[in-house]
Amino acid sequence: MCMAKIRDPKQQIKPYFPDFPGKPGSFNDCVEYFKTRFRSLSKTPGKEIYVHVTTAVDKENVKVVSRM
Image 1 (cartoon, rainbow, N blue to C red):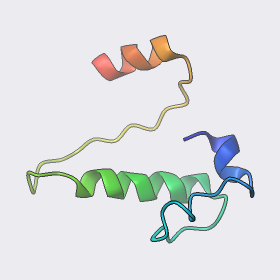
Image 2: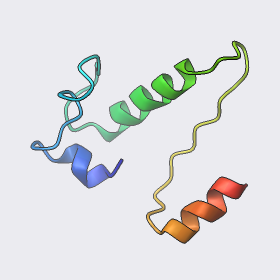
Image 3: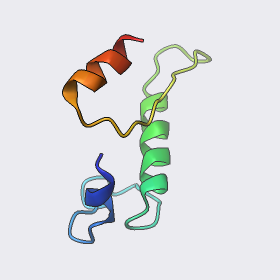
């Protein structure tokens, strides 16, 4: 997700995710929504799924972070 896109009134997630309960244009609401969605996909109840929010846009940087 790109913060600029989320804040753009022409590019909202609600049309694609109708159950999104957050405020339009709220980056924090979007992040929390997707964290909850990813965690709900766990097939092992009780096992923690760690979600990391980053500002990395460099593909090589993302590769380094994801290897940690």
